[in-house]
Length: 212
Image (cartoon, rainbow, N blue to C red):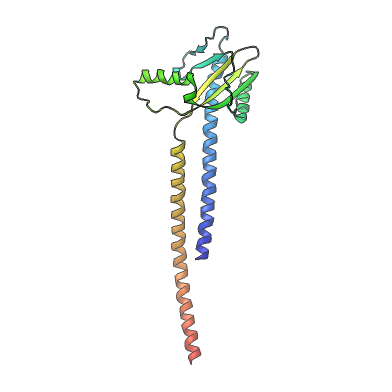
């Protein structure tokens, strides 16, 4: 019983660590995809003559979801927390494309508190006839400023699915854990049953010998 409990606890620990590593890898992949998407949009905007760039520029060949905003003011609001790690990654991507940004900003923001994102979703809803009823909850805002120039701001909606992924990962972890514990319990029962039988025979033989 104690051996089985120890094995079960060890398996639970191993499965928990494995699930955490998978979740971390998935999160990092999603964050990298968001940053690279934003960087692509910003780089497209940087290739256009800033003197002709309107306040909200619709870049050639890009859909409305790829709108890039140009503003003289920093998009950072009071109390918002910047993502230093993502900012470093964005700075490296821009520098790799020969875009020397004077300053970069990357942060997370609720869609409900972003007027530009709300306007974009309203336009999308009118175009699609309201088929996209579920509004994204968060967005990633990435911005950079060239020396002596305005801010270029890109917004990327954070896709749904994190909650579903977490629940499926937990379910998968519990299922694997249950299967492994059940298999080990079955194997240990098959192993210990002959031992118990042998132990009983030895005890009966000892009792018979003592009686004789």
